[in-house]
Length: 367
Image 1 (cartoon, helix red, strand yellow):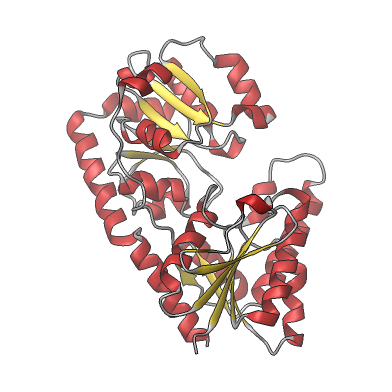
Image 2 (cartoon, rainbow, N blue to C red; image 1 turned 135 degrees about the vertical axis):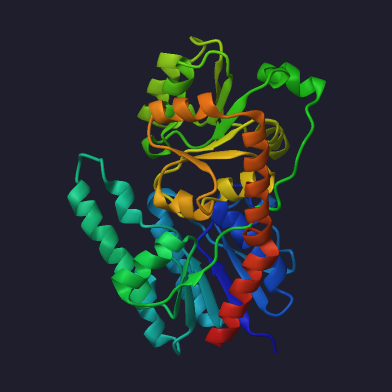
């Protein structure tokens, strides 16, 4: 009889959102060859629900996966899985309050993906920041303490877990080889006129830790290069401020609203001359592994996690001035070599076949 594995902590599948959802989808696809897989899904209209997907059972709960309901959603998912599964793969610590209950359920095996160092993301906030840091540190400690295995997605996070909790985690990043190249069509040029030009591109959420402002400031000083930034500008004060101050005021800077059609987004991304990865508070970001898998020449914000993900083979900027200096020195041959380096790393490390094999081995080792 196959062992039962529950995948917990996302909106569910089919994947429509970020990295955890895509990870869940590929785990569901490949783990069911050896295990009986269940995926917990957030509140979904009955007419849109599927009984199964990729041969995995879908379990729907009446809660949202985001906002204040996320902790209830994850906790209920975990407790439900204690009854029906042998191994729980839990992504993120929103379900913290359910972890200790495992003692009442014959000690089911818990594989916990820490996701990132969440308390560090609080820094810079003014209201209640010290309290939030203490709470999130405690959340992290509880989840790690009640888990059989901790998964990290970056060597820097691996080192953090080792130093903080004195345990060896499993290093498993994200695949990026699902990203596909798309050709520019006349229809898309009509919708996105910048596609008819040469441009550099960055795609991220409109948050201060994404350092979008550095790109904008740099390209104000480089009018001969075009920059396209795709973001959800309307969802934060930071994004709104950047949009109001800069949109349509510089002929070489295009602040594109979020694009949710994946084919269109891939077209915009893969036809850029340079891809900027600007995240500063993440591990190995799925958007980075996708860009690398597409063979894009990637330039990164200078942070340890980004250097680790790109094996110190990219170019790194700390501010707009250092980015200007990099761009002014780059030759076409440099970009070609950078593209080749990023693709080689991605082909070796960021494939779903490799990542799912790591999870499969981890599950087998816990049973």
